[in-house]
Image (tube, rainbow, N blue to C red; front, side, top):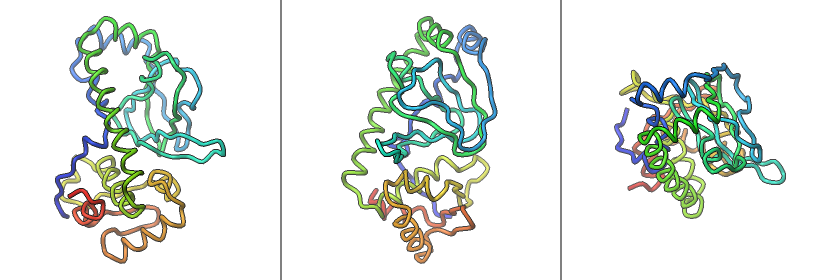
Amino acid sequence: MQSIDFPFDKYSFNSDSIFDDLPTEDTVLLGRNMVTHNYKKGEILFREGSYPTGIYYIKKGKVKKYKSDKDGREQIFYVCKSGELLGYHALLSEENYTDSSCTLEEATISFIPKDDFLQAVRSSALLSNRLLKCMSHEFGVLVNGITIFAQKTVRERLALSLLILRNKYKKEDQEGKPVELTLSREDLAKMVGTARETLTRLLHDFKEEDLIETQGRKIILKKPLVLSKIADLY
């Protein structure tokens, strides 16, 4: 498998480190009313326009963040993995959710009630500073996402999306092995921002070029370095 030095920070949030090594009192506060649920694929966590009552912490699985237009068409702008937080932006700003979230696979997710989370933020300088840094970084990530759609072709966007997903789906014990993506073609098309038919054609092209392999719904990335050149990262 090709090695690749890819700038993931430009396209990934940093919320997976917010809860690391917090003081015991903060951890106890956040966990005292925490409720953990197992979700099936396709379950909604929250919808655009609803009011937040707490935050979500992904313990296992992946969740898509997306916006829908007036006709119900989705645009996926981010995929969250285990360790990441959801919903804290709307809660801190005391506004309704500006996007929706839905599980992409079976997931285990904890819910922390609003009052507990806000009390922890008020009492912990460490937690509040981490949240401020994460929100500032996420602004840059979203700006980079806008730039992708404004400046890159669909072929370039697909190559980049596959690389971003590669970082989401790879496992610690998978070093040196090809990464398998299990995102549906429909969701991948929504992430790339193209029609499913166009996506299918481009995936066929990548397969013919020996860049990927497909096994049913699985997409196996064989040559990430070549994909990075197609995405015009160098």
